[in-house]
Image (cartoon, rainbow, N blue to C red; front, side, top):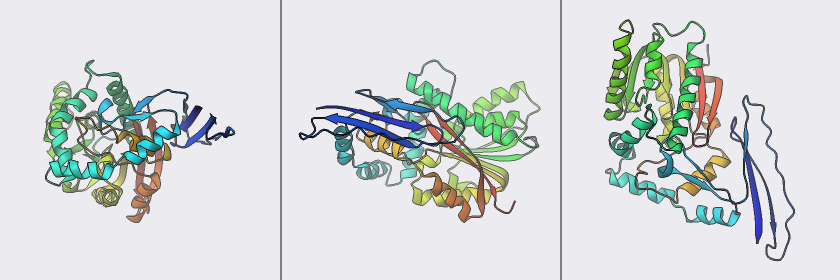
Length: 330
């Protein structure tokens, strides 16, 4: 049997279209079917996967091979992969290894082997593979887009900002450099220590800047009120039933503005993720949850917030949707 599958997606909105042809399938010949993607989003880009090409894809929670998504032509292969995947059992097993607490497994991962990987990805070392480098570039683009949102208007000097899930300080440090008063936290104490170390290097050269306050804590433990709350690439650790509550909590900490980024749930990314769950590498210690944009927006609307701006970052191995929201009454 000869077959060719072509899949196209729009990196601006994540929409999916496909065209396929096959010959000698149960003695019948299938007519070629074509699909089109229509998108008016800025910077829309379409990619194709044809023939026997295989591509690995990763969402922000993992690096390269540990959470790779394989895409191969041939519907039978994809169907078999999806049928055999049992992500719920694997998720339960991961949680049991951490005493039944999935968030504790996230904390443990980012304090141990996960910290070493992401320290490299979020750093400047050349000791990264091509997947890790691509994720670094993608994450940096999300940070740049976030800063572009935040620097508009009156700027950031003296503005209080909560960087929820600060990692190694990729956003905290540029916020500090713009004069913001930053409270940065992360579930991983190792990440917080690294962020504090990197910030100290910048502060030594720029003593006039306000030193960020760093805390090792999960999102649920964040208290206080801030002009702006930012949470980048953290919702990927929360299933939708918990994500809505977390979004409400973060909104309650913000007075004027809330920025969230998440791995978008689209037909294209969902299929890749499900296939990828067949290949659990030894370091695949955390689960990756995709979120439909409408679900995130509904969660914001439910607590009196409205989305004002949107951005999409899509490199080869990194996909992240960024939303800016403000109180609906403003």
